[in-house]
Image (cartoon, rainbow, N blue to C red; front, side, top):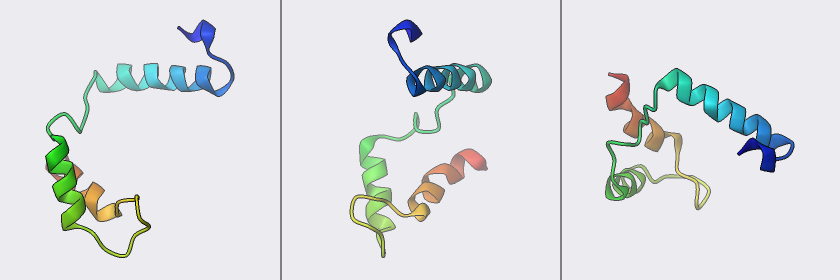
Length: 67
């Protein structure tokens, strides 16, 4: 697959491979549906740039995994 990539794509591919080896395929977002993420974004709206959620959304979503 990396034969078709050039430059930064090859580097990103190597980093993705390294990440998957390190995490064992773990994904913090597996437990969330799109509705859960939309709800978190609407709960934590504030003074942010339109289209970019606040850091509070990230903290709200990742907190259960950190505990």
